[in-house]
Image (cartoon, rainbow, N blue to C red; front, top):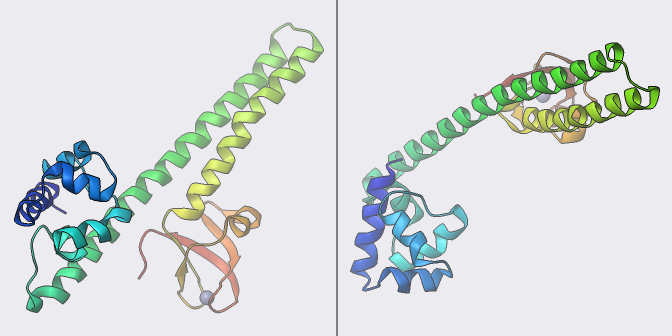
Length: 203
Ligand SMILES: [Zn+2]
């Protein structure tokens, strides 16, 4: 998506509808600074605002994301390309999240390991050893929940039986036996239990 092109398009449509940045902003209950940021290509309008913004500019959401009014013949092709671009963006973000998950896991393990080492080899009262180890467990547990949450929501799990790709519930991810990122879960489509691989895109 070309943010600069979208910005120029918003400005052009706003002027065509005889509105100042402030007038457009007031209609959307946001600041004129936000409108100015869109128009200079520094940010994109929030998805939740898009329908109302498009109604005010007298364009479709498809036109907005494309940065120009789309003629009917190209309509299907353009929306398919946009959907594909959005899917690609999600894939890139998911990839980053899954790398972050590894980093979090490693860091939390180092903290816990360090605390256990310190409690074992540094001279301190027994209660201090217990407090130290318990304290190191807190970031460990927090990061495990965070990491599991990433694993649940980034990408999809693919059913080995029917090929269905889906996002499971947090509970089913939490209790599923796993080998690496492959988890043994029940498919919501065919109902069969199988080892399901993590995939970044739906096939
Ligand atoms: Zn299935």
